[in-house]
Amino acid sequence: MLNSSEIRRLIEEEQLIANYIHRETQLQPSGFDLSLGEVLAYTGGGSVDFYNVERVIASTTPIEPDDLGWYDLDPGCYVIIYNEVVRIPLDIVALARTRSTLLRNGASVGTAVWDPGYQGRSSSLLVVHNPHGIRLKRDARVVQLIFFRTEKVDEGYRGIYQKERMGMESSHKA
Image (cartoon, rainbow, N blue to C red; front, top):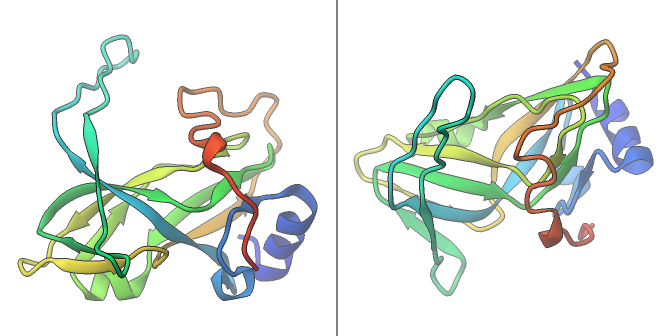
């Protein structure tokens, strides 16, 4: 697992993470916190098959925060989109874990693997378990991305999510 010094070096030298809000706040001893950019509500169902030939991604619609940037979410499932753009080198793989404060408030984030070679502004599944719902403020830190060194792969991620939402990237704030 990479420590904060190595993550900082990769951010500075290889743009491992861009579009962050405040690097030193988000940088953790063994990871980097990703922050909430957007919340989407599901409006339809999806389909998953073995070869992705019949794959259908469930339709969604954006949820607007209130004037102060708060999302008031009822129990249920949502898509969250992170602020940060991630660029995983060919010798790194990343996993994300829900931040403990989110868990203590009755919500969790389900994530997939960030494969070597993946680049993009990713999304994940937010599940609000708390029967009273949860309030999340835009830019809240919701998951910690942890990085592991691996044998360098010959060819990185080539799936349909490669470079997703890269056009929405802006420079980091601090």
